[in-house]
Length: 168
Image 1 (tube, rainbow, N blue to C red):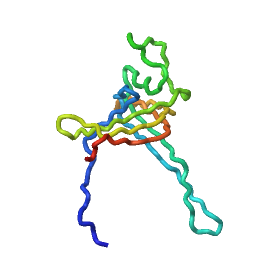
Image 2: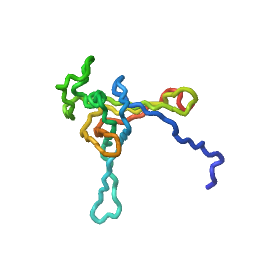
Image 3: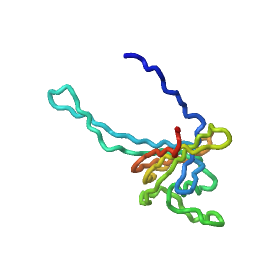
Image 4: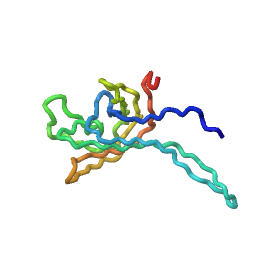
């Protein structure tokens, strides 16, 4: 087979900025977010048959998010979707933030910006974590590093929508 006469340009995604949002609330304490979509497979064999058939199961969607533990846990309260910070005067001191499996699922958005442009960042797309619900809460306390909180959760779908004109 002959080699192609033209090779597509090699593009590396450098200088991107990711902004995590719930509605209009920006979750700025996030240090890592790892959404995953995985279709489980099973190999099915018959007696006496050396070949196996692959059976595909429905796709499962999960996410792991790590955020800095903060003096004011407003952003954690937003993600746990329970008790929220009062509008004025700060926390009262009787609020309790906890992982609550009965909350309504909500969408998380990850806006992607190309920060490699000169002067201003350009939005290139949005990841949508559809109907996200936290399923575990872990507090990570270490002597050498800032304390972090890890929220793991499940969602119904993971989609990416490029901004109009991207790649033109």
